[in-house]
Each structure stands twice: as C-alpha cells, then as structure tokens.
Amino acid sequence: MLTGATGAANSYVVSSTLSDSDLGFHDTSNGNPADNSGTKSLQNPADASFHLQWGIHHTIEQ
Image: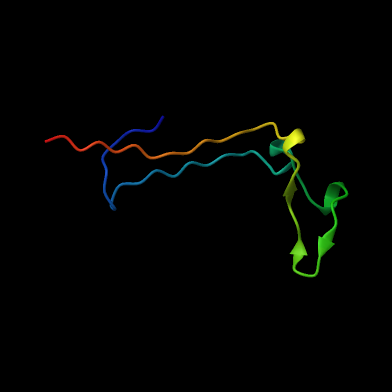
C-alpha cells in the first residue's frame, strides 16, 4: 500500500523490471500474430503470473 499526501502536486511512480512474458503476455517473439496496426500483445488469463489491483483511498476528516 502506498500512502502519503493527497493532491495534484503529489504522486507516486511505480515501476517494474517485469517484462510482458513475465506477466503472461505474448507477442510475435513467441508465436502470437501481428495485425496491420503492429504487434498485438495479448494476455491469456490462464498464463498470467501477476495480478495488480490498483485503488485510491482518500479520507477527509473534519
């Protein structure tokens, strides 16, 4: 959980070194087709090894 000051001037940047393949995403390098808009990176839920649940909780106390 990330907690801290709220407001437009306060933010968090969450980064990761995980790649598409780490997350269960697949592209042309491992057999997924490409279409005319470029490479599709698709996820097969059965292959996913990572799940991220993201939410914002903000409480105002008076």
